[in-house]
Each structure stands twice: as structure tokens, then as C-alpha cells.
Image (tube, rainbow, N blue to C red; front, side, top):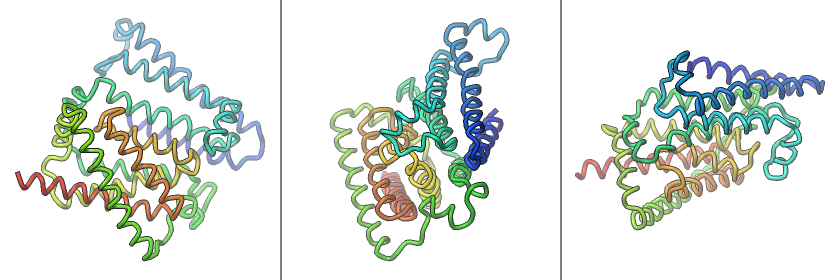
Length: 321
């Protein structure tokens, strides 16, 4: 099932880039209709999950804890997907986001962003307590595969080997050679982000100690038995994968604010609308500013350094105990 979804997404990305190359308006309209056609059955399946769960179980084996929550997720994201398929809606969004309402690639990015955000919100719909029970230790191999997938989607999304070739792909993603001055500035940004993390953590501890305890429990489950090499691989994987996707590919399409909201949403292990989420949003804004001021490569360096520093602090705290 997961492989089929992945192949569908890759196929849609390649098709969107091919349609982007076509000047005939008919192809663009047909692509919009295709996306509407894909969203419609998901909406109706969501309706069945909410209102006809028992009847549906007679025909389909439902391996999900809360069919109602999944049904609502499918309905909401499908509605979003259909709405953004109308060019008039994209023209309205153009006032808020730097999208091209005529681009099938940007249309697909809007559709997928809804499912992307909805999927992660669904994971915390049961609260941090439920999340703490469900999450297990991070598989480093699975994590690195996921980050490689982020990179692959970013490259395909900007038209690698379809609309763009060679250096044009790297330029679009903001992957440039960094200078020594940018390296030195990165150290300062890493220190600033660490101060922000410490301040946010202190405020969270003072205001919602129960949530902090749950998040610490989740973190222990996720990162137990992590060594220095685990943290190094984790930092490099997250820094490269997330920055190339979010700051490299998505930010020029969605802008810094919308992209930062998406970035905060996908880190579900910290809950939804918690002080940690706010810190992550501010972190994303800073990384977005670094992307605008310098390039994605500098943002990658800052992200890797920040994650590695947090990992080393965690490692030292665990060994001290």
C-alpha cells in the first residue's frame, strides 16, 4: 500500500512537470481534473468511515484504531485538494503565497501539502498520551530512507531531468558552495537557535510540566540507545533531507511563513500547538531567513549543527545519569 502511494506521488510529480512544459491550456485543465478525480473517491471513502464504519467492515478489513478520525482526515484533505484544483482558488491564494496559479507543479504541491500536514496532525489527534504509547524506537535505516525520499521528491519536484538539467536544478534548490564567512555566520545562528531552544524549554517546563514529561517519555522511546554515531547520522539526515525539501524546494513556492507552518506540523513528537511547536516554527522562520539571505546549503549546515548539538546534550545527560 505504501509503495503504491509513493509510486502514485512520483508519477504525479513527473506528470505535473511534463504538463508544465506544454503550452496548450487543455493539458493544464486536464491535469486539474485528474487531481479532482483522485480526491473525490478519497472524500467519499472518508464519509463511509465516519458514518458507515460497521457496514464497511463487512467488505474491507480496517486496520486502524480510529476510523472516524481517519475519515475526517480524508474528508478535510480531499476538500482542500479539490478547492486548490480550481484556478480561481489559486488566484486567491496568490495574494498570500508566491505561487504561480497557472503551474500544475504548484497545484500538485498545494494538494500534497494538505495531505502531508493532515497525516501528521492525525497522528497527534489522540493526544500526547496516545502518541507516547504508540511510538517506538527510531530505526536509523528507515529514518535515512525517509530523508533520502525527501531529497528525491525535492529534486523531482523542481523538474530534475524533465524541465531542468544539471546546475539549473541545484540553483533552483539553492544548493550552492558556501563561503568561509557563511560558515562562521552559521556558528552564530546555531548558538542563537540553542538559546531559543533552552528558553522555550524553560517556559514550557514552567507552564506545562505534564506535557514536558510526556515529550521526554516520547523522546526516550524514540532515541533510546543512541550513540554519538547515531546522533551524527540523525543530524546529517534531518539537516540535508528537511532543508532541501522545505527550504530548497517548497519555500520558493509557498513562501517562508506557510513553509514554516508545514515544518512545525511534521514534528509530531512534540505535540500540536505546544510551546515546542512554537519554538519549531521560529526555528523554521530563522532557517527560512538564512535560505533567503544566503542559500539552502547554509541552512543545511545550521540545521545539522543545531540537531547535533541537541543530540550531544541528550547523550551527555543520559551518561551523567
